[in-house]
Length: 323
Ligand SMILES: Nc1nc2c(ncn2[C@@H]2O[C@H](COP(=O)(O)OP(=O)(O)OP(=O)(O)O)[C@@H](O)[C@H]2O)c(=O)[nH]1
Ligand SMILES: [Mg+2]
Image (cartoon, rainbow, N blue to C red; front, side, top):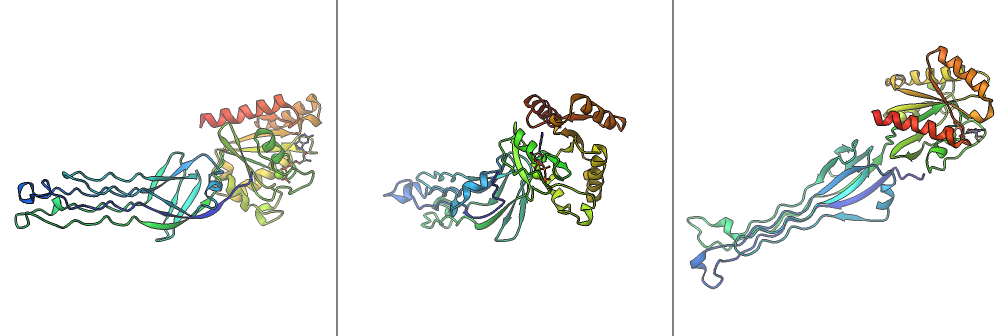
């Protein structure tokens, strides 16, 4: 999945409508007095978090987003219409920096809305200026300009579930099996160099780089990429069942997760025994038994076995639904 993870856009909130000069009886001011209505307020620029990781791509090549102008005031003290807000969707997990003042806004919840540019206030109609000493005011004020700014939108991945494991454990293959992602797969270590995302029944699964012993001291690709799974609800720990010592693989990865800190090792975890097609059922059961002695339930998966994939996927969804 090609993700655009940073983009700059410009936006301008709507100008306020103008206040107007009107008279109840246009040709005989003294009979009715002033009746010019106020202008409506300009529309705001509102950002909203959505569960669509590709939304930023739709902003590409569009220069300025604007909100509607407020309507001018009318006769008989009628105020102008308020301009409609313009809503700009950003993926959940995005942070939006407003260039004019450097303020940063985070969008962590689906449907969360924040107004980042206010529309201009509508101007006052001449009816507002009436006073005991000014019975027939001929003044009205124009609407104010709407606020305007550039915005830098950055996407930090917020996945619901994160695939972790040694290099070659089959993480990217699993992401591809679960989702429409087309992550690169290779029979060698460190195939994945950038995180991949896929959507599974509305949940986002992140596939990240492989961890090796010493990753927290900078070995292999290091461990900084664990930040991409730091906000997930569950880690899907992939252990290749055909490894000489699957439990040792498991422990190695757990140690590196603990070395990352940030309470990552306290996150709930589902353990998948990958590449289950390589071993006989008996051999898999034997591997599961070894894990069970450590009170670790495991689920066998194989990307070429639709039933196992479905059962494993259901387990992930069940877990996420509970959260
Ligand atoms: N037989 C079999 N091979 C698999 C299965 N899943 C993955 N593989 C193979 O295992 C190798 C590694 O797969 P990847 O999905 O690239 O592994 P990864 O964990 O993403 O590896 P890194 O990105 O390097 O960390 C590839 O040659 C895959 O074809 C499986 O279920 N069965
Ligand atoms: Mg990979």
